[in-house]
Image (cartoon, rainbow, N blue to C red; front, side):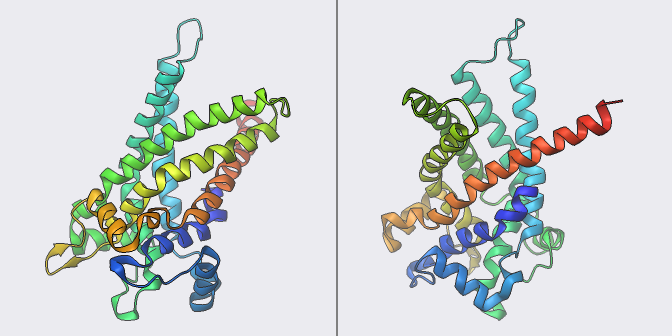
Length: 282
């Protein structure tokens, strides 16, 4: 949640980029920088932090569940002699934890997508949610409980892809850097491996991410949803906006991934130290 406070503007830019040019309309934003300056000009400094409460709730639900399940399964599957699970088993644990966390975090994700997308709509079409709790209550009241889990399948698919790609690419990148002879096993090596892993993860997960974003933001047109499912989104994006539009918002997505990971671990280390000092020292 601490890391999200710093990277929320990048998340907002990524979501706006993914929704720009929807339905074969002309793209609102040419580049990520153009998107950021346009949002600042139109909505001010507060505008780039729209949806922060939903971003924080998403971390509190999704990340807490994911890390909790990962840790529990990891401990359960560690051998009696302390041998950790093998790579394949680790990947399965990561995917299971990611998918379960994504299911729990979907309502906050729906609120986040809608809140960050609101500013691009004409004033009469805006949803105007005050905060994440107001958003969740209004979604249930106006569209029913199942809408909170709209886009749940692509959200879970994205979590599986992210976890699998991250695990595999991080260990491979780290091994490659160590074998090159230019790196030793230190924080610089971990950081570089994280950034390479982030690049692979971003490239692999963006098409699933755009499907998730479009489904969670869609409206009903004459009683029918804009998209039938995730596959329908991908087909329509490729047909009307071009193949490479599946990677819209690549720059802010990648730029968010690196700092978010690094900041998460920095905060985690500091909190662990504080916890040991305050609660375990006595």
